[in-house]
Image (cartoon, rainbow, N blue to C red; front, side):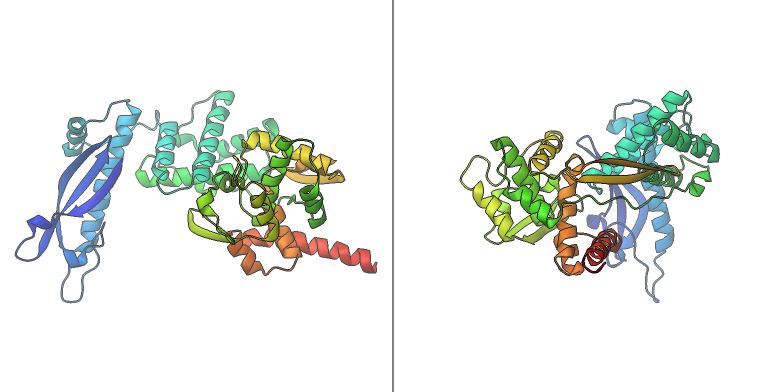
Length: 407
């Protein structure tokens, strides 16, 4: 479903006023309806009326408020149809739209259907990973309600609900504190949206707070990376997995972006792609000598530009690759479940996944002296806080090296 406002330029009056119409597109059907308001083309920004000048009061605020109400009414109609499992049709839509009756959706029925609608409306403007994360949180909350044996409605989202969800997450599921923080973030975003739509009237959720902790950044040191890169693997399968992983270590590209790499993205000296996570178009990365060696290895083969494997199998095989490269020293990670600190110590190769390739690139780039601004650009990092976490890791590393050298 898509809602837009357009000017009916063929209906312009002698005073230069043009009627505004609402256009609704859904299921291959387009519906146009006059809004009852008009404006001059000079005051139209494509979706709303711009303020007038000193000589002319164009009543822009009143018109825009009414357009917003019409847009909200259309959204309510579609939510009403979905919740009541009514098939969309032009006739049914117009009956609801032209009726003076208020579109009511009982909050007793629709918490998760509203959640679905919130997710669906974000699909055109949010990244795949963001939507995937929202779906996961929505399903988590539904499982929570089912296991606790109660029905979630908007009016029960209060501090007691928060306490119950927190205890369930930490004591029953033992999830990490950072993930609980993500759950609360998504839940609050949904509830803000539902409040704006008029589906939710309680505001207790605004007090919900969950703090995250810095996580351990797992990466391969330059020496470990070179051991892995140069290791003669037992099979072509492991060799291909190793090469794919190392390509991430040498470019900073995520697994998802490397998996979509085509020959058209590669020139003599650069990879130019669109970044899936941030929707960044034509992002260029200079190819270093190691990245070029990997691409040359597969030139002219059926795998060109890179062999691709599912993420699940990849994360299984890259551990085998690192074990063969003798990346076996003990390594400890830490996390929090509520206020309890947890630790796990294993051989380092057990912690290596597709995500650690990008972390390896960023951390080693800092240690090798690359300017942070350049790393942000190459790795397409949008927020300073993200790079700051890596700065702390490299500071700890250089402190350790100082102690080893000088005691």
